[in-house]
Image (tube, rainbow, N blue to C red; front, top):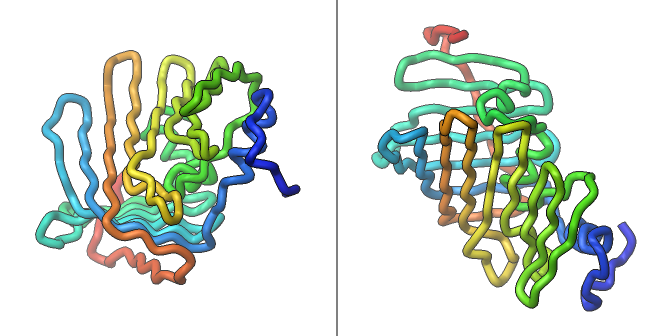
Length: 224
């Protein structure tokens, strides 16, 4: 990518998008550890431990465990598949990567999931209306809404897929590497089904090769 002058404010949506993408920096490896708060519809919130490891353009690995360290489930996403192990009921499944879109009720690709986790989402192609203030920029289109800081980092976005929507936001940016320590994601449908996830990271490690253990025990039963 050509050098982009960040000192000059963007005059239009195209220039803003160029600056945002210029600031994106996908690490070869990313390791995240912290707490995740889950809420499905009106059920009680659950706060658990989470570990996420990402190898650029290859694998997204995650493990969720109870407060005392007992693993509940483990999952691994590749460009074409989703692998899942449930430790509590000793089941597993292997499904096409499109299964994630079914769960989130929104059309989303492996690359887009990776970009959200690594806090480097691309602004998807569409015709946008640009709104600017001293503190932030907003890009609005028929299917997407993005809020962008004056440092050209996306702080929140909403993706509309028909009547469904997926929204995510970043906060508590580290002043050294400008990486957010908090990610919130929610899915809404016309039936008011809501899936909410809030992750707070206590440890972030860039560009250190990680082990990605994933073995399905022989005694586990495949789940449809």
